[in-house]
Length: 420
Image 1 (cartoon, rainbow, N blue to C red):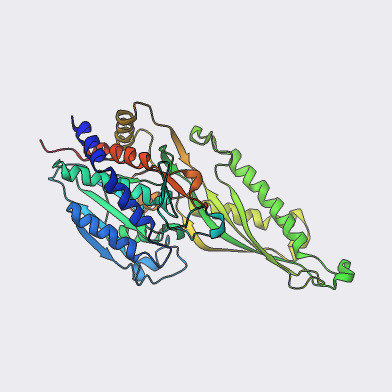
Image 2 (cartoon, rainbow, N blue to C red; image 1 turned 180 degrees about the horizontal axis):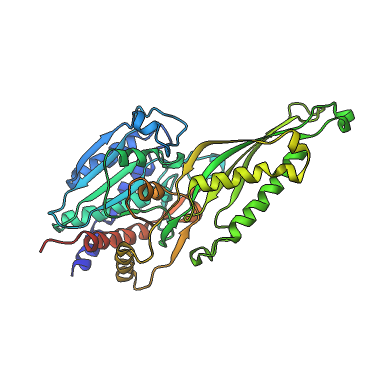
């Protein structure tokens, strides 16, 4: 009966849901430009009837926290938004967490549609942020709207969060945790292709300085090329990646070719074509297993870089320097037997008639912060297309937004309980 009512409400409000998603996608909410999109969220939360808390994150407690990561430490103009639906009491509480920030659109010539068009074609809504993760956020808002419109009295509190800074390491979610928001469980509707991710890898950025010896290009044998030495370093790192991934036996990773990759994403070196390069900078990302800490992964990587001197005597005299910088995502996991896993899986089956696919996340999310710092067990599950996140022509399948909303609404009811 209740499921039929929720389904009917979502069907009746189909056009409204699409328009809300279009409005959000049409706002370019890259880092530092989130306010207009958050204003739309605030307006919607007030319409639903939630108590709204909006603030610009700040203060020493945040920026000096060991898990703070952001290229900026001031967030003027960038709002964090929380909406609270108080329960009647004696029910389990739930955080619904989504990020409003999006990555830049990149080369616009690679887009078939304008990057912030929100255009609908063949059941897909296109635009930067549609899949990562404004579509998931709209699923949350639709689920809450349905429950409120149907007058369902929940026992437990529901805490909706629209945070900034997820794409830079999670400062928005960390700020919400430090503001006191905790719950018995949390759901993040990142683009999982409707799979359930109870485990999320973490990651961190590194910078390596590889030294050489300058010489004239015509007598390059008089020098030592930092470019050639950097190739030795990269091959050494590939061996570490292989070793770390061979240790992972968790069946949730069976469909992921490299569960915790080490990626070199940027190389800079040399300053003149006719000179032997004497310095190369390598920047990259280390994946972190849900079963280890950031500190453990750092220590292993640092020892591996120090071992370069056993690979090539050059590095004994000119060791490679290592710096940890920029973004970090904390790994996280929830026990597969946790009751929230059961609640979400049961709701999924009711709506789809199928058993959910349960895998480990191939990327980091704010779930690690919620679990590790906020003591809130977290699952990642959402309607977005994993393969289209951060890509040109990003899109989301509209029917999946509504399907996820129905699953989430039933999960809220089951988890928080209903006053009879």
